[in-house]
Image 1 (cartoon, one colour):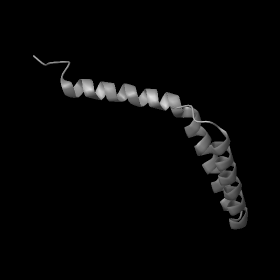
Image 2 (image 1 turned 90 degrees about the horizontal axis):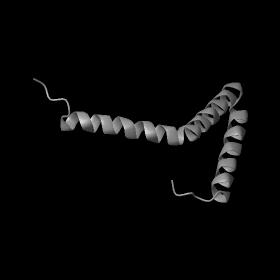
Image 3 (image 1 turned 30 degrees about the vertical axis):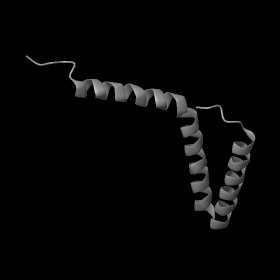
Image 4 (image 1 turned 45 degrees about the vertical axis):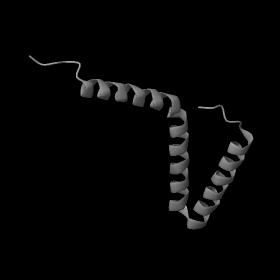
Length: 74
């Protein structure tokens, strides 16, 4: 006879539920960050100078956005 609700199994279930909840909460941020990363990578493939300009604009824009937007306490 096997026990179903062992502490290890419930820990893994709780961890999986918390991981899915975190992913659902931050999925937009992850997709935006991934998209910006691919745009920067593609511009570096075109030219190093263009890649540096795009990277600079992205970092300045991100810094401006983070400075202007209030933290909502996530």
